[in-house]
Image (cartoon, rainbow, N blue to C red; front, side, top):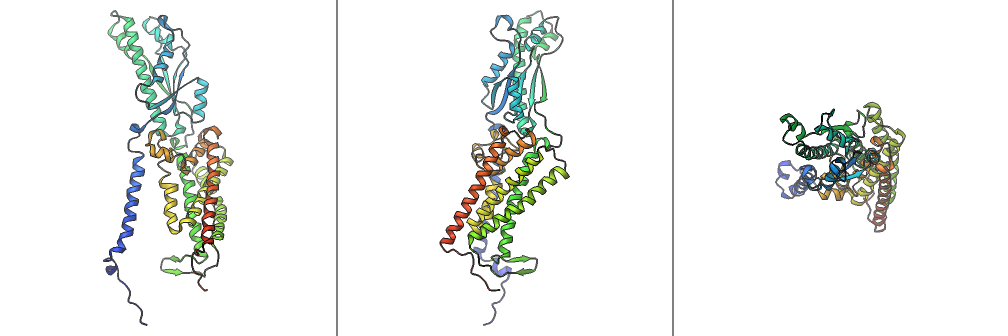
Length: 420
């Protein structure tokens, strides 16, 4: 029988069915990626709801003019009522409580009315005035530069509104005899001082190293899992090996799906130890990223990347070649905008806040942030992250082996063995 003539690209390009599936898939991917990524960052100020911010009144002055509370109490009560629309979740705390929540990453910032505030304000209308009253705005850069900035903007605006309210009272008490210069001073008498409430290292990327380190761990698990899966399939003769113009096909090794998955997962556990260690080495040793608790960070990095790698193997085993696309959406496409690492979850649409409850990147980033910035405190998100890593690993094992055992029982062989 004569060999069939070779097809030409020009001939094949005229076949509509050749265009249909790639066009639909790439179009859907482009549309979904655009909606998912841009949808989470287009307008964080408009989406902002209930950002946790501490509100502290350290003012111990006597209430002026027979009032029931001092000026610090009046200011904090007015701010806590939040008539502007609920963008901040004002938490009225003591100084010690506020510092603890800054140190554990539970608040994005704080507004503090200092001791002696009432006396310094009252003195402005007398000859004994020696300094401007102040209100302190504390930032928390460990919560990310944008989140800390949003909290700083809200607390600064609240402090200026409080200053103007105090100024109206002072201007009224000063009366008509006050000079124009005095009236100008009294109109906005409080100085707002911005300070760092919980400092982080200078090599912390303004609070972004936690996000990028988490992304590296997810990519190490995701790419490593796919490389291992493809490598095993090639070595066992279930996939072709093509490098440049060279194409080879190894003899097929008779093995069922469950044993193949077991092989891939064991190899993932071993190889991930190398990849996660190299991520730590590159970031901390070579690039000088600020990081304490290095043994804990190393163990956490391995377990985080391993959980992702096991998940990739389970998804690939269940969905076959389509699994790489599924795992990309699970671990990366849906994970990035719902991680809360660059934009606070309080400033993204509700869909992303829903995803954050189970998306792996959010769970992992909380643990990395706790280790890098908040002294590896369990209540800073580390304990929850460990729990979610364990749950993720168990689910990956259960789902993966349940699917392969089902396929094996049904007799769904991957490929008819080929002779050597």
